[in-house]
Length: 245
Image 1: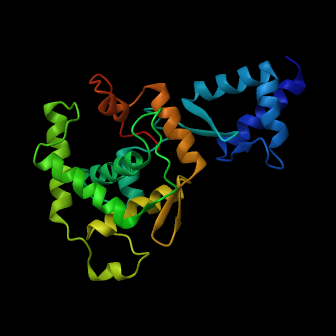
Image 2 (image 1 turned 120 degrees about the vertical axis):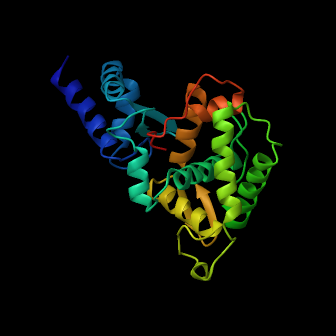
């Protein structure tokens, strides 16, 4: 392998691993994007390096994105990591955050072939969708294919949601996030997703980013993870709590 080829591959690998995006039409990365697809040796080396570290690479809108693969405890988040980062104390609180993320995802997708053309989701819409899903779980109206253990876990999360008031006095500050209300939990969750560059917030509207679309569509198409299994009716796959979204 020529030194030039190795250097280009390492430039691409290093940039992606630092959290940067490589886009076809972005100054500074356009050449690397072209090289990634035009040079078979570079492409092979980059993908093999990422695979060895359990890193997935996805493309959307002529831009490359990477995310930690399923079960990646080095570059991903564990349950304890997320509880610490988000100021949560109990697993049930963390699972409620996962449930909120799940509903935010479903607002835009049902499967890889069914992307709903929606520019954004409003806070009140997201609150309503979560409440509807929680009500269906509590009343056993939901139709997802779940094991008895999963059903009980979802029920615990749904009951926690029902225990919370819609808003508390602190929520008058629209930027306030916390564990005291439904609004606070959703804001806490969406703040985290914004930090992961998955959503942009404008007033009370949340816009999914290209990174969000790349990861979600790639996730569905790979056919991995418990969310895919729940949506497709499969029962054999597991949602890893250490996944980085």
